[in-house]
Length: 90
Image (cartoon, rainbow, N blue to C red; front, top):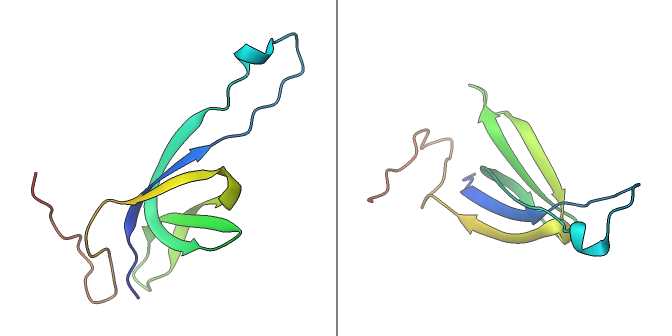
């Protein structure tokens, strides 16, 4: 199975308990990077680390409602038969 290396743009939830005005409470936008393990109607799951037995670790799991965009960064991705990333031209 091939896993694409991706950039996930997502919006975080913010909560306040003080005297902040509405214009001071903007939802922050973040970008996370990893291999796309799962993307369905409920979640986006990426991982950053893989061992010699092809087991993934270092997960970030985001509710689909927080995800704005998923962008593949490396053509081809990483698979069992291709353990090195393909180099891209700059």
